[in-house]
Amino acid sequence: MRLINGQAAERLDLSDRAFQFGDGVFRTFYQRDGKVPFLQRHLAKLRADALALGITAPADEVWLADLRQIGSQNATLKLILTRGETPRGYVYPADLHPNRIVQSAPLPTARLWEAEGAEVRICETRAGWQPRLAGIKHLNRLENVLARAEWQDPTLFEGLLLDRDNHVIEGCMCNVLMLENGQLVTPLLDGAGVAGVMRSVVMNAAQQLGWSVAEERITLPRLLEAQRVWLSNSLIGLVPVGALAGVRWPVHEADAELYAAIGIINSKESFTL
Image (cartoon, rainbow, N blue to C red; front, side, top):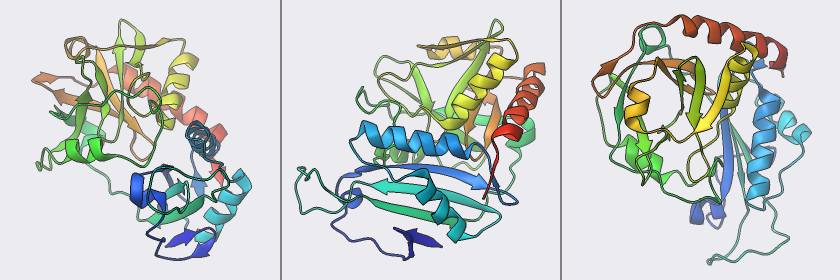
């Protein structure tokens, strides 16, 4: 089911700037048994990303009304905010009316990697450098599309993107975090990448455990020497990496510690629609 500006619909005008330029932002998360983990964080992130692009986001209550209208107890949910509709050309008027879209889809099925760790590869596609877009989950995901097209092996869960200086940035659909000398380290996303909601949750969980947390530039050799590597996004949660570039990681005691800390945060921030 899809809603466009609060009305059931399946089509958006072809003059919308989402089609023309990828001009907009989005969030993807899940609802299970009527509850959405970290929903307020998602709405805040959507609002901040929209503001960074100069798009006025609706009030949270508007999104909540749309989500309640969708009416699914168990679903993958996606919120999209486009700048709106214009004729051809990059210029847009200041009073342009954004379009908001809410859509639901089935929940993803469980995968073997949830227990054994994910098989991951390094992508040839590089993450482009653009500080003004760094951290934002905007609608232009062509780098991710090209990177994900590099493999068809169903046993491979994710591919990692490096930047022009060979620093690890993110996965096609996930953020990357690692345990190094008892410290949680994640790539600094000041030139590329998406700063995901689940990434922030994991960082908060680590801090509650008393771990030091840092955002730094991470080379691939440094990542491969880590005690543990994880992937995160709002659909998979936190998933350990089992193998990457010939290196294998066994189950680590930090896995259970982080899962427990994330669960405590989730119990406080889960939102019932």
